[in-house]
Length: 340
Image 1: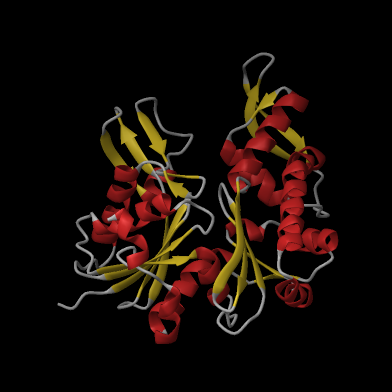
Image 2 (image 1 turned 90 degrees about the vertical axis):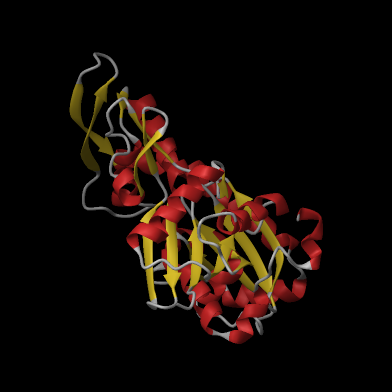
């Protein structure tokens, strides 16, 4: 049986896969539930369902941290398990992996090794910068455009990429993401209300209120624990606390976008000033974020209907279009001889 071709977008909290043979895209939570510190209990969506709800002897861990692989063997086990047990997995297949742009070559090599040194017995593994995959997934002509600005908003990181004629001109990885905002909301509710909520509850509040939105309700009642008496209870959390908790992170994001624009070469910058910036990644769905950035930056801001699928959609296009394959590279190339 002939091997398949897979496109892999490995995010901090979600794995997205394109399967060429089936011509399908699917996603799964990037989580593993470990029992008694050594036994794999469950992986993927099933493991994530246990997050903050599991008994004391089961821990839910995330093999990725801040966009890079932090627990290599856990990540390898998870990926092999998802491909082999839940899909029609074939050995000897080819893989194209989207990697963060602003990380070290050693960290990029970890993505390569993840597939090469696995039971997948990969025939070929090629790498592409996530910013390029995002732009292709948005339907932009990356090889002909003199200037594209991509803002990929993920679970723990935000990737800023300035592209020109199929290459990366400037890039920066920020430690700002959905989970970062959730932690800020947990801290703000605790400080202002003497009330402890979980990260999942903070995520629900973030998604409900968004950024500077006129939500029908100014408060939402959520479950938590009263820190004065230690008793679990339901309490209303105001919209103002949630949105103000995200304000500093949004200010940092805006500052970093402006800083990167200032460093962008004039010819590229002029094109970006006309075309604007493009939001991708799951956090781009946050209510009001698109409008907020447009107002503060004074630039057009574009968002696709499914920004979380932009990178894997770009991988699909790269796999199906021969002329786009030259945007990918192998770590067996001469440039990476020192890493072999």
